[in-house]
Length: 534
Image (cartoon, rainbow, N blue to C red; front, side, top):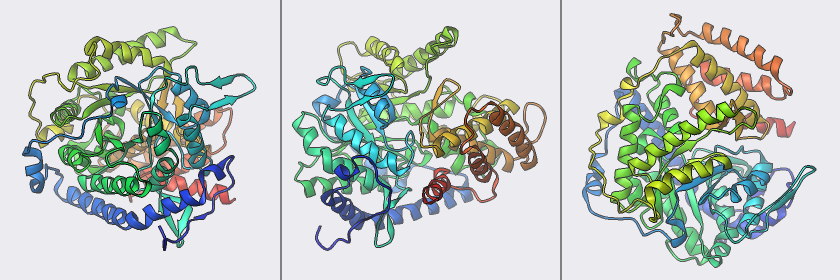
């Protein structure tokens, strides 16, 4: 690492931050940035070019230049012993109390989220690494005025799988030669540097979820990062294992290729369905009325395009010896309304049953109370088997038209749906600006995908002149009127209006400005930085 420029840290002090931001750890991250940031930048430029092609053609297809990869017989490396049973995975941010609750949940895997369920406030970026350090070593605890939180059984906790931020994000609190460091490399690098050897000594390993991938070339970059990181720390090649979220429409056309690029480090693919819907809207936002979705809550996994996406994911994974992990059950149980719980638990059970019967090897939940529901469903299908890799599947052929059959999605475009997008989008952004990336809204655990879908759908409806169930045409003026009304209701009901006005400004800006912003969290991050400097 000699000759690599040092990292400058501009973030405010964080408790125990000196244990994470050591000279050696920062040098390791600086080396990763020096080696791979330029390629990351090239890949972001390639994303923009591909989006321009989609805008011009209204079409995506499987890549002809990689047809031989799709046709050939090959498999990914076998999974480590502790990572073969993934029937129930709990997701959540690396906030300390939620970390302990996740580790006590009884799930097989904890997705320790440094991405969409987190926010890039510096206290969260560094504090999350502190909590992961303690979680890996089974020493994590928390004492509050109300309760003391400890690991119920330190010898038996879920497999820890952090999710770093996506390739598009830069960490402005860390710079090299005045250039912000790639956030994905910060999150990955700090965790790997501090914990890889400790994890191996405990019989597990450094496993990761990789978000927002848009092509197999982005997977190739991750593979090169993994290869170099292992070599730099003297960790055996193939120790790192990654599960890639197929949460963009472009990645759905490159599942085989993504698995192939990461085959020495691959664990599986996940059906990240909420961001997947966001990606469809984003990429086809100006492609005409045939790509306009109904209310987001009306788009279920039984819609033809979503069924095709899941079928292709399971078939591709199992052909290659990788695990297929299902989507999120975001319901948060209520201790006040058993009837709401009964209906919601029935929907969760139905959703997980559909996934298990479709061949998925496990699935996600957002709350510890849902772990038994998911486990019960997968236990019934898996029996004594840890997964469904050996289960024969009915062969399914999925075409590009199947994946793009947006027009066949049943559902209406309603005033209630439009108002819901506005209300939930603003409420989530208020929580996000306050440092909470996993916000409980209307008995659902919402992350950044919520606001992305909400504001993107508003943008698309305005630019396509959608007609609502009321007969009204969605215009900028109509949305602005609904924003006024919904904001007034939120303001009247709020016990804390901190950041509410800024949340409204960001939502309106990204939902109505003619220039579409690729990621809402980028201007929101600028607001966080301004507030920190203030």
